[in-house]
Length: 273
Length: 352
Ligand SMILES: Nc1ncnc2c1ncn2[C@@H]1O[C@H](COP(=O)(O)OP(=O)(O)O)[C@@H](O)[C@H]1O
Ligand SMILES: [Mg+2]
Image (cartoon, rainbow over all chains, first blue to last red; front, top):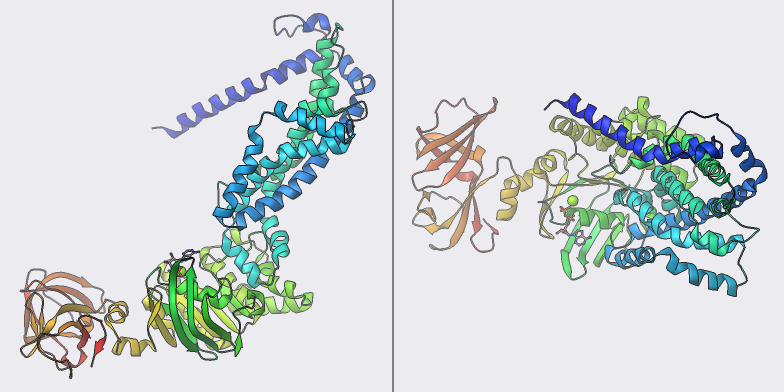
């Protein structure tokens, strides 16, 4: 077997797959800079007069910035809450006996088994009873609730890679339970923390169903906001595409800024020690 | 520095008993090695001294103070783990100084003590590195440095050299021993390697299946093993042990090999016993037992030879003299009569 040849094939396949995955986004990007007349063309024509008109419209006239602000409030709060609680829970779940942690872990996982639509109704009833529709706390807590199982399970896998002797060394070196967590365990799983933060952020930022049910004029997030863009309007496609690109932009910037941490976190489990 | 007293200490994990009442003392400044086959409970005992495991029964005292209920950090001990357990997110200097930081020692004082320990262990050039940037041997040193910086009452080592290659292991043995002579700190050291135990220890505690089989200096264990287990465990290559009984004029093995015995008080004819002779206590002798050579392994300084008696017993011998016989040839051997060990066939206890 010739390894370079294998690798070339592999790289070609991966490149093709990447392109395939990106194609909807590329298409949307194209549509967002086309006039409706070009956008409705059934072929992927490159013969058109590009315009930034719809991007301009999205960012200045359509309430996009307000939605973005709401989305950032919701997403960042969700990450802060679910990550801090999730990390502590995950840590403790790896420190206790397997017999004790297994039922808890499965119970937490059980939360994820319900389709979100099943939870949306009770969440709505609860929020309404507490008069919390169109309030950030209700929105944030619902996102934390659906996010938490994931952060706990993900962080648990990072903590599980820490040899128990490290904790024992910490105990001998004079750490109490909190110091062992905060000064020893947490810094070790820091790369994982970035990964968990990113995924929680994406989940909360892109969440549509709960946001639709629980938000209102004051708290409308981006996915809900842009879904309401001029459905009957002829400019609907171009506007929606521009908004879709707009909604992606902050995430792309976030990823680019943090990519060093993320790559380390994503590959951390692979190389122990 | 302090003495350690271990009084009838027991350990059970649920219903599984792993340590069945162990008692011994470690003198102030002594280097004691717990040795025994894997799974015999050495680490468990060491971890109870450290406070990392609860003590199910009995008492452990460090420096006259019973520590059963004292958490690890207040026992004034330092431990070196088999996998070193260095904090991966801290530099070498931070690893070494961490316990002092936790104690609230002044920064300048920490730096001074870390530098001292680094000097002793030749780590000065590595202080700013992270553990992942170190070789196995260097990590091992850092783990020791972390222990030294604390200046504890007792050092605890759990198989600290078993992740190193053979050459480094031999070198580190000497270094740890030298370090102990320099610092004089009471040390409890766990290993499954009896050579490590023999070369490093002031005193050895031989453990087997959760009990102490024998405690003594390396040479005491070598010269007078109290039972068949210790006899077989201590010494390399291992002692030849033949099972059989007392017969006419000496020992007769199960397969009928007759060997003279000068040990007194071995009791009546017919008593089942085991006959032990170390490979290095067998000589070539013109009027000895004729045996067939089956394997010859020269190491240069000596030659290890496996021979087979006519009755079928395999016996290992070590000769210091140049050895010319080849496999298949016949030689005559004689056990040194005063260096024969006899053990009771049922209890395994020494007969003397
Ligand atoms: N946490 C535990 N739970 C149950 N059994 C254990 C536990 N730790 C150790 N053991 C058992 O105790 C015995 C002694 O273990 P250990 O002290 O690690 O042996 P050694 O260090 O001499 O190889 C072994 O049989 C092991 O299986
Ligand atoms: Mg062990």
